[in-house]
Image (tube, rainbow, N blue to C red):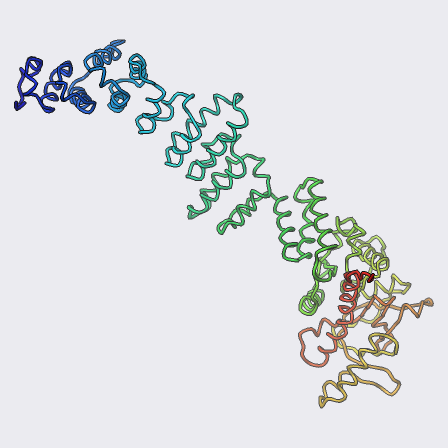
Length: 566
């Protein structure tokens, strides 16, 4: 029978012989009157046809007008019209998919027809017919959430957050661990940090979130927005920031790193790169960084341990005080950095003897050399900031036999320290002077003799003119002076340990060797550091006497222990 539009079909459908009924006829009859599904022939009865008939009817008719209980009544009548053999989980899944009524109505009906509602809900969820929040709590599982989050459904994260809020005090350790893992997965899949409950925003989640933003953002504003949602306990963690700044785009992050962590990171990086000078410089700002005292001690101890056990080259402390002018000091520093394989640590009188490292006896014993460069006139006031600091360094040098190089002001101050007197002299204004070296047993004289003998054999007039040996057996060379004061010993001195090895032609003391580990020059060898002429070569050789002492001091401290053979 061909089911053309026939207004009488719905009324006579139940009287039509089965042989003339097909699927289309059933759907047409159901379109006019849903009750006709009761008369679908046994041979055609299957779940798909019943659901198609129901859909065709419900698509064409307004089912409910808001009367209480009408939906339950509709479902009850509908199920009465369907044979028991068809009333399986599959049918109810179809009804859920059609969304005719609320899920609860269908679940109640399924329960009344002896359908396992837990299995039904699980199947409905697996087929994406219902949302996670429509699934009863007792059916929630880690696997369900994991799958939903992996598929990028933000409903799972949202509902999980709601679950945490409602059950905050009811979750055991295992549940918390699983929820933490789920939130971590959600952030990996692009979930925002602000959508994660704060108690679960741990360091791992925070790092993942920020790195995701850094990878995607053309500008850093996007990740910077997320920073505000990171708990303080995480933001104050060094490992959190290290994870960020180690990322290729993480250089943006260093600017926002807490000051105390910046200091710690800079110091550790310096130690990692065997740059103890940089580490010590950064220690100066520990106080400014409002660092916890315990943490400050840990950092300082780390530097001490490095100096004691891991450093690869000598340490030289060099006084550097821009307030007094550093023109010549910069020349000397440039020379030392080029010619001396050492960590040159610039220290200021403002650091003072209470500096966390300088006040530590173990650290000062590890220092291999000290440089006291030129500067303004040495004041008479023993409480002068710079003079007091220089005196402290000399005390440490004498105590530990640390090599010292004193130049200009440094030369005068060292002489005064060992009993000399500083007096005003005619101004030596940036001009070369003749230095005369008499002391035959001095290191300086031996070096000059060696140079003299070598240069005399060369066909180089300039070299021969630069270094001379006059008939009175005095070595002479030129150097550069710039000072208004001179050093004199008005009282007897210990000539065996305080050797005056060089004087100007006017009698001013120009060079000393003290206690076999202190070298001083009134003149400025560093002035010639970039010259290739003989005066430059000679100046570098004379400065090398200090660096050799430094290297020997370092080698002596780091000699391997020799085990006696048994």
